Length: 591
Image 1: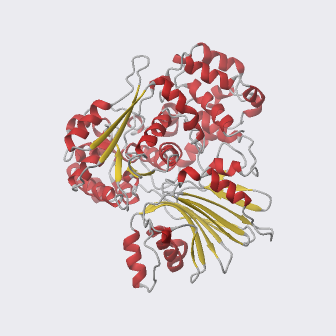
Image 2 (image 1 turned 45 degrees about the vertical axis):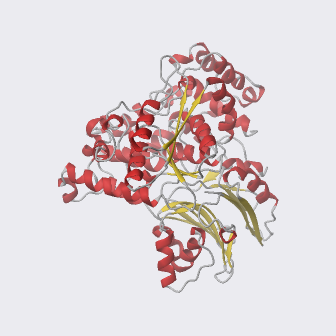
Image 3 (image 1 turned 60 degrees about the vertical axis):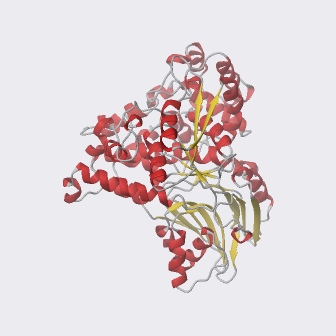
């Protein structure tokens, strides 16, 4: 829902509106229903609205409560806002709207920065205190909603997308060498606070930043994933975990139906999205809109999973929309998909989500998606080898990293290399934190709080919001995640991964979609780059801009051009697409 931006100055000068207007224009796709800018001395706030809750003018933003002396710009949805509103009314607060935005304002006034601990939802927001001059920035537990920051000549700029900050012309656009190493090593995941640009940072998930009028700031991390288990948890039978899990997930799905507009489902045909459809049907949802997408085959790999999405759609009688994309249309859509990326994201399914979102937005404003199940319930192939490993960091790196540090040194030009292996050090530091003793739990925590945030979740947010579509992810309900962390990893690894979730799903959906081979959003023509796709990538990498940038050694690029089909990473990604996508994104952003 929506997008917001703003500026806070710390040098005594008024903020003005030029930068905020430029950022707000860049965020137009995120909020096509309305826009607004609030200027108050040294702070400005901008907002683009996608109307989901309280469609009236009373829900417009930036929202100001003059009695409380608070202003807010907010992106997201607080699913338990009605319960919180009732609690706040019991404390004597009155409301002028029915929006969850106003609930955040009142909750902040009542409980201060601790209010975020009470929110169940996805959110990023900026609150300005009239009396103190403080600016408070916050982001939800899993970073489902983005918040980018840039310091600029005595001011702080902030926005829901990185390109919006670039649009101001006041951001250092040089490439960050550490972020480049993360991109090339950690499967294009660049964790907070880094971004690929040296002048832009992002607020980490589960963080509140309080910024004083003189620019001093303090961060509060209000939530962490902890994998502590009681003796009772360890001894609880598998069947009890299964039944408890089903009820927890049922509630997570129902919480995400809070809206004043129709809600649909992105139905890939896999276990996760199929279970969402099944639970909604079980709850009595009629005429549910579901959506699937498919592409042409390449190198013998099928480009769609319609067989399974059709099965679920027919089983539950949904209004199913099936989109097949020929290769020519996929190539035509690539520039738009790349333009929609807040940061370069290498996964092939970005273009799938982009095209799917374009179609979905013609029918509904809100969709549920199955992202997060693999990271929460152990669905990836690199988890089983970690069980009992004496070298979990090395095991994880061997299976997840696209290349090791030594090989990266043979692919990047010398000016762009970093002496230390920052990506591996980051994983080691994460694995060494308390709260997860089991190697599998260490990987689940890293993947759910870092990799998930800056790959699958960011992908879904960016591609859906490119068309003013709000995506909700019930597997990332924080209560469900905390519950899942208590389940011993052996139950998650059962049946080749997600065992306990699979058994819970058998009580709801047909077993045919549970026992199938694990699939992904397939776009095989971007994995096996040849013909006009090879020309498209090579043209970008041999352009004047790329030559002047000089990121990659020419002999490395020549090897990729000569045999792109065999240059596949451990996670089945194309090395040529990885380096080409980075250059294409930089050029799309005018960098």
